[in-house]
Image (tube, rainbow, N blue to C red; front, side, top):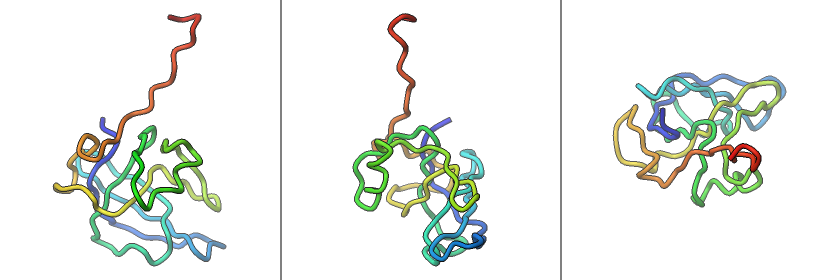
Length: 119
């Protein structure tokens, strides 16, 4: 499985006690179905996007500077108790829903370092 896909927003839900956030469900064809927390009012149903999955290492892309604090690695998170499994971003890749676009965007997969005593 890849680390980033072109997807489409299929559901949007409010998050209780969150003024600026909402939950979105994205379908990525063969890439699966994922839930992410997004900025309220930013996305519409049927809109295409790029979905960065867990353990994706995202290159320095304008608009994703908030990823700097996590060393640009996507991790599962909770916002107001709601799970975010991925990062949903503007459709900056060429292709169709379900296309894997990691290579096109320069996204790599995090590999846990092997401890020295196991080499």
